[in-house]
Image (cartoon, rainbow over all chains, first blue to last red; front, side, top):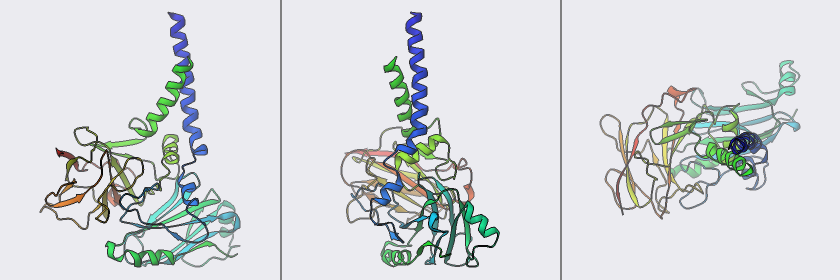
Length: 182
Length: 183
């Protein structure tokens, strides 16, 4: 009886260890992360407007059908990144993702006085150069420091009505995204 | 011992990432959200959930997303039934409500029709509250037509919910989901 109880107890302890291992290893092993899903859509250079979610069509990235989305991938090993452009007068927001899908920075246009988006992405070494004024960047650039070099930027834009969606998607497609020439 | 170990290890992991109410998720009525899904350093459970779901999560300052799989009486949402979504929503710049298929995330609305409710395009009562209907058959007021059979989930996304930035815990005013009739 005691022996059986001990075996079950040992099983539960081992189960706990398996559980912790699964939770901690899953982010590294998961083949379904958002990053891989975006890469699977095609070339990752420049800005890409994602197809709108529509009825009956699979929606693995769980996009909101009301919003228009632009994504772009930036590798900070090739220099600091930037996302710039002008967006229409409507709600928009920007999120910067690490490769594992966590959001390292996000903001909305709530406090912005213009429709201009100017975001600069810098890793730790580049931030140091920036502080030492060894990097030349445009004035008014919103500076975001990242711990990772592989970044994905997603801009969400909310057209006030489905009828104007195409025009809003064009504005997203016009965003410039890539590495700053240094 | 091996059976107990595997059952506990994987069973608990599956539960943690699918339900997660005891771990990283907040629950308000039938609605659930992963609280730390949009912050830079989420806890290990939220991190594993993000990896497994593979969706583009909203950043903490962009908004907050709630999902309901059950109605307010804890019955699975079913496309054969008519649902009334009743009440007011927390302050936000706007919100959307989308009925989606649980496995693919595809909107389950009638192809060619509207895919969702948008807070700016609804008829409201004088106190600002809303009454929404989701069903296959025609319903009064704000109606969203769904198609197909089987279960579905409701996804409520609040964009720029300025008054609840940071915590997400003071969202006491999410609408209830009331099952009215089933075909």
